[in-house]
Amino acid sequence: QVHLVESGGGSVQAGGSLKLSCAASEYIDANYCMGWYRQAPGKEREGVARLFTGGAWTEYVDSVKGRFTISQDNDKNILYLQMNSLKPEDTAMYYCAARPGICIGTLGNSQNFDYWGQGTQVTVSS
Image 1 (cartoon, one colour):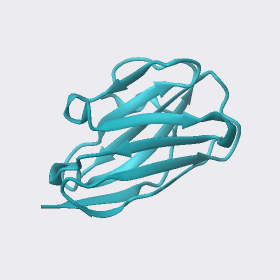
Image 2 (image 1 turned 90 degrees about the horizontal axis):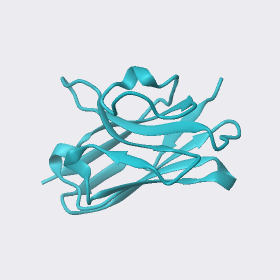
Image 3 (image 1 turned 90 degrees about the vertical axis):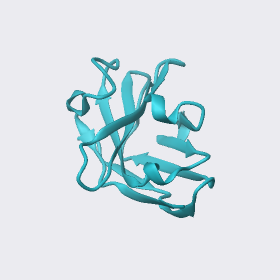
């Protein structure tokens, strides 16, 4: 069982930046798919970005391309999401997710992940 803990959320004005972190409770080797999802009130959970820990492959939802960057620190077992040029529509609870093995299916299908954190709130004001 992998426990994930997110941090780094907060309130910023539009155009600002935040960096989310996701700390894993155990060693994440080079055979994991890890991702970031978000859910705004009244909306379904949306895939934001994911990566495979064994290579350079990443995937982003169109709405964040060029603004968000997903990355990992293997030594510290931490997954990051750098968010720049934030918009009010980015406001949501952000969740970290992980699954052993390669990334499968589509980014939009959150059921592809086995482990989830509790989330960190991001609020962007106009």
